[in-house]
Amino acid sequence: MANLRDIKRRITSVQSTQKITSAMKMVAAAKLRRAQEAIEKARPYAVRMRATLEEVAGGTLEEVHPLLEVHDERRTLEIVAVTSDRGLAGAFNSNVTKAVELILSEHGVRFEKVGLTLLGKKGNDYFVRRSTPITTAEPIGGDVTYDKAADVARELARRYAAGEVDEVLLVYNEFVSTMTQTPRVSQLLPFEPPKSEGSESAVESLPYEIEPDPAALLAALVPKAVEIEVFRALLENQSGEHAARMTAMESATKNTEELIETLTLQYNRARQAAITSELVEIVTGAQALE
Image 1 (cartoon, rainbow, N blue to C red):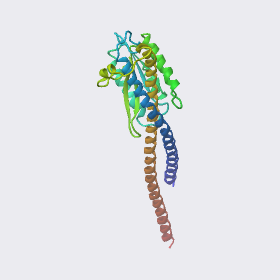
Image 2: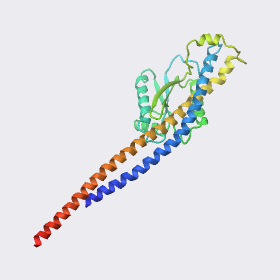
Image 3: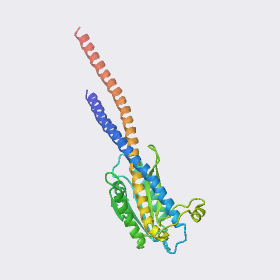
Image 4: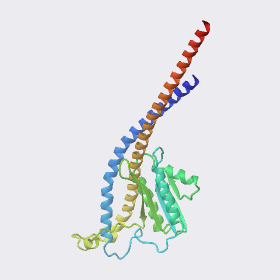
């Protein structure tokens, strides 16, 4: 009977866990819809921002913007790693930390100093346990805001322009679909807009003039573009986190269903064996009284 009580207790415990995982799955699905809408709206703006910057930077400039200028000596590398504040999202956060570890092993030889700017508690927890030097660590907290991204980008831009860092890499999970979130590493500073095919001819044949001048426009566009890149990374991370958690909780819910079925079968077998044993004892006792 003690065995039956233990099995029944386990079934009840697994059923409680199932309710929690099912509720977390529904919450993540609801948050994912809003986060996915946000990143789908932000992507076209970020792409157009880079395209415009490429057109302006493609012209002949007397002075290069400080955030576009490549430092002659690259001694200090700063890695900006974006993770989530909470767990229970499968391998979502570990994919980013593994990518950062790979960068540390590959770039640690080329740079005299490597710093970490960690956005998200999970990344901070991971590298604190490994005693990795951390420049700064901040939780993302709630919904992503542009002000949060802008503050981070401005500080990185200030440090780069002052020569405190010579290169900045941005590491985050790119939201591809509900089932897929791909770790991505991009160079944030020096900011290099991608060169498309035929871009030089496109710049030469522009049907408009830049006013007041390309340098003034770059002064406004480049810092904004860096902020947009950080903001996009935070939005990608937010969507990917909800998608990964929804998938993980769906898998956990299915596992609890299978476990409940197994425990129920085990309970019924043990109960049947106990009843059979009691019947045998009753029959044996009755025969002994005859």
